[in-house]
Image (cartoon, rainbow, N blue to C red; front, top):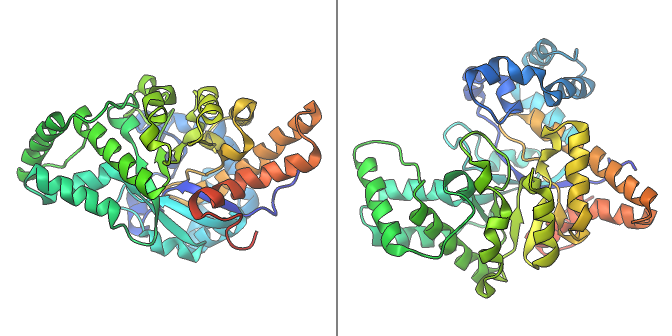
Amino acid sequence: MNLSHIRILDHHAHNLLKPEAMANFTLAAAFTEGYAQEIVSRHVYETLFFKRSLRQLAEVLSCSPTLEGLLDVRARLGYDQTAQVLFDAGGFAALLLDDGFMPDRIMPAAWHNRFAPTYRFIRIEHLAAQLIAEHATWSLFCEAFRAALEERGPDVIGFKSIVAYRTGLDIHPLDEPGAERAFITLRAQAERGKSVRVAHKPLNDWLVWTMLEIAARDRLPVQFHTGFGDPDLDLRTANPLHMRSIFENAALRNTPIVLLHACYPFTREGGYLAAVYPNAYLDLGLALPYLSRAGMRFAASGALELAPLSKIMFSTDAHLIPETFYLGARCGREIIAEVLSQAVADGDLSPSEADAAAFDILHRNAARLYFGKECFGPT
């Protein structure tokens, strides 16, 4: 299968760094979830992902398959042209960005419209940190938080939570007194001029439940980080099976919940949830392209074992540098083609069913979920 004709509706990615932020950024840091100096300065260069990526980037940028070659062509083309070449090669129908990652160092979401129509997710933990610094009392904070979600701009396509990073996916029912106590603690930090990090379980759970209630009322999709990430995350608490109480809550059945990153290494668990709960959807981002080629096939095929084809979506989870958008798009098309071709060989799908599934995963499922239509723009 050749899926180059399908324009990807990239339903989960992040903004590019500002050019001036690149001066203090090590390019290899975008190729690892680790951030220890030993990882970024040495070990990332020995990953299969990095070595494969240099060869793939060399093909599209016409440079030598080395870090030096990549840096040279970036310097020669300049920031904007390098990005344009890579986005054009990636073939995107739309970009749906979570702009809460490194918010002070990234380009605005609207800037990315030059590459494809661009929309935003509100990352609730980032929003809460901002509002705690701005509001002196719990009641004023609650009012402002709800208003920000309810009065969102037209470019906002859904909500996003990284509660898996902060207090885990075992999200408890509302404990407003506990949430208020956490707010008071964080507000005191803000008043002393310290940065605010929302990582207090009663408050984090309150943020998630409040977000879910608004999303259910407005039938707005919600994305959750699940599975692997950087060392800030306790992988044991990032298993999406912890979210069963949310999926079992009848009041939230109108809330489409997207489990990001193929839930890796809990891909089969994510596939099970997508198979039994109507509002559970499974994303394939981050695992594609971060894993080895065999690992990517394992993740994609694991998702297809049980999850309905109508519930699986692909994203690049690209971030910071344009190379990650191209690499994600390329690996997404190639691996999905391989896995679907194998499904045809196994007799699970007919060739025409595999063609339809490819379009569903790369484009149509996201178009239906986020925009309520069969496709977004020309495909």
